[in-house]
Image (cartoon, rainbow over all chains, first blue to last red; front, side):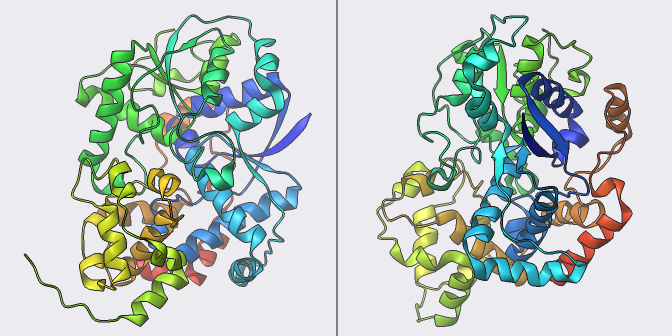
Length: 281
Length: 168
C-alpha cells in the first residue's frame, strides 16, 4: 500500500471539511494510505505569500517539506495551491544546493534541517498513476450518470515542464478519472481558463476574479454540465462563493467528493452542508 | 503620449535577477504572452509591456502600478513563451520588490496576518469546527493550529526571513 504524508492546507480543513473527509474515505478504499502531516502550516500560498517575500515562502515551505522528510514519506495534497507551492519549493530546494543552504539557514533558527529529499504529489495524479482508471472502476459501487464540467485549475498541471503530469493545453487525466465513475465529462469552450482567484487577485480585486469565474460558468452552463468537478479547494471556493451573485446555480464538488458519491458515501458524510450552491445528488 | 526618460538601471536589473527574474532579458517582445493572458482580457495588465518595462528598468512605473497585481499566476504565458521566459517568476520578483517599497494592498496584508497569527491563510470559524466534529474529523486540524510550539516555531521562522517587517 502506497503511503503518503497528508498535507491538509487551509481551505479544505477550514472551509470545506467534506473535501478532507471524502479524501480520507476514498483514499482508504483505493489503497492509498494517508498519514497526517502533523504540525504543518499553510503551504504557504503561492500567490500571496510568495508575492510578498520569496524568502518567507521558501522557508515556510521548507519547514513543511522537512516535517514530511522526518516521517520518511512523500507529500500528497488535495489543493492546486498547496501542490504548486510545495512542488515548486521542493523543485528549487532539491535541485539547487545554494537554495537549500539558504532555507536551512532559516530553519536552523528553529532547530530544523531539510535534506532535500521530499517528493510532492497531487491526489488526482496519485489516483491516476497508482490506482488507475480500471482500479478506480473496480471500487465504484454506485455508478453515476452525471454530466460534469471538469475544472483542472492552473497549478495542477502548470508549469508543465517541471510537473510533467499532462498536457496543459489539452489535458485529459481529470476527464478520464471522472468518467471512471460512469459520469460523462462534457466538452466546453476555454476549458483551461483560470478560475480567477489565484495570485492574490481574489483578495485584492474580487471583481476581476469574478470576471474569470463568470466566463467559466457561462461556458459550463452552455455545455449542459450538471456539476463542476474541481481538484482545488481554492477554485472550489471561488466558484461556490461567486455563483449566486453571478446568477448561476451549478453545484461544485471536489474530485474526492465525486468518488465518494460513486463509492456510496452519504450526503452527510460528504460535508455538503458547507457548500453555498446546494448540491443535490 | 507620455515620454519617460530611460536610463540604465543596473541596480534594478540585479535585484530582479537575484529574486529569480534574470531571464527577462530573453524576451523579444513577440506578444504571445499578452495574447494568451486571461487577465489582460479583463484588465489593463499587459504582460509584454511589463516585460519590456522590466528590461528597461522602469522601477517606479512598475512597482507603483496596480497592473503588477492583476496576474493570477495561471502560467498560460509561461507555457506559450517561445523564449522560455519564466514570466511568473519575473512577476513574483517585481512584487517582492514592490512590497519592500511599501506597496501592499490591505486585503493582502490581512491574508498575510492570518498566516502570521494562525499559520493558515484563512480563519477558524465555529460552524466549520462543528461540521468537522459531525464528520468525525479532528475538531482542530492536526496542523500548527493544534500545536502551540509548532506555531511559535513558524512565527520565529517567518521573523527570521523578515516577514514581521512586512506585517508592520
